Length: 334
Ligand code: CUA
Image (cartoon, rainbow, N blue to C red; front, top):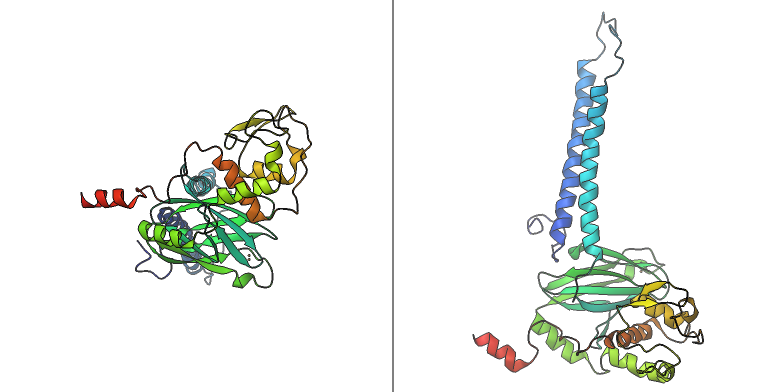
């Protein structure tokens, strides 16, 4: 709402941007008010209590006032608690992608952003997304720490080597927005920039159709799963030397040391690269590591495949609207 008139703010491009701006305005108003108050009082006291000829002060010594002390402690405390709770709510909301978010995978490297859509399209430094959808970003770096920063969406999330981090957004207006790396990552850090292109759902689907060719990430992962020999042990029955992976993703897994962990992206990644660290109960630690054998992109494809084994039906089409042209046309003529 401020963005259109004031050049001070980037455009509010996401559903969460307004909340962040209101918090920022609140911080600015509170700190601005007290800064002005302090400076005004400073000037006023300097004039009011300036030394005058014949003065012989202090007449009475002031020993302090508990009421005053309590007041100037509790009022700032109240303001800080409001800032803390408000900020924490926004933070928690931004770090928890809604269920059924559409997924985008990102790999940061010196000095570029590589994006993968589950449908198989890959892009570099430009990310296309549909307007009006929750989009969850699952991100990792293949070298140093980077940070995924889209000012218009008011999101900034560090992208770490060795571990997936995620963030999400819900773009509210089509357009092209800046993407920055917000963590100093080497000599070309300032050149690690790109753009997020927010498109109407129909245009996004058309764009997506034009880009595929290698198949979905899950099918690429399935191919790898066979090529790397994973399928020899991880069979879809109970006879394999490794756990059957069907239906595993997203569920708790009991380990041989009694712990229970959630089978999420980071768990699958660790199981591929460091199989001995979390062995599933009832199995031998015989799996070899794939450290140095599979790239970050291949790992993401393998994860997409494992994920697909837990989805009974085909993944939903790119938007919630009917993907079949005939049905889309019918609903459009109503
Ligand atoms: Cu990547 Cu700075």
